[in-house]
Amino acid sequence: MSSEYAKQLGAKLRAIRTQQGLSLHGVEEKSQGRWKAVVVGSYERGDRAVTVQRLAELADFYGVPVQELLPGTSPAGAAEPPPKLVLDLERLAHVPVEKAGPLQRYAATIQSQRGDYNGKVLSIRQDDLRTLAVIYDQSPSVLTEQLISWGVLGADARRAVQHEDV
Figure 1: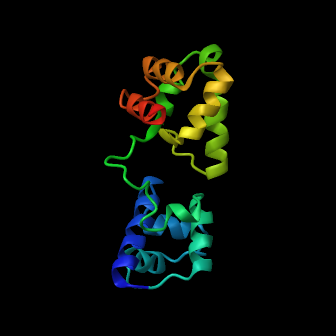
Figure 2: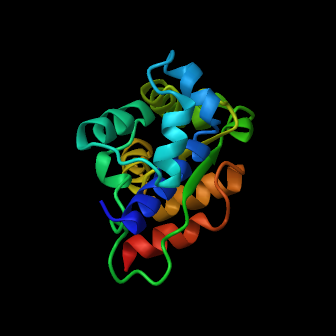
């Protein structure tokens, strides 16, 4: 593995870990010692080669597909990636359940699957938004506007939906 590739792989590993709000020691604690902080740190710095099997296991631990960890797997030709769709779970808790019940249950399911219980924000994928649009019997763009009006999604989510329509 070239040192440049190892550094790019490490940057992706670090980005996933920090996105999940974990420190290196947090990874060690959450994995009950399966992943040592010093080892994960050396992978992230590109100082240590990671085998395919260990990378797959680490991807499973983080709850992401292996390809998300590999360098150069961003969409080709995208000048600017679409903005992330981030649900504000604190604001969602204040939306009346008769409006937000399906979204609250969907978000709780994602949190459970990911083991992500920070309770503040939750990143969702474009596919999640499309699924929610089916549940709410609305187009993704109409649902996005509704979620923005509830304060659950930021206004930049409009660009993510426009990016889909292109």
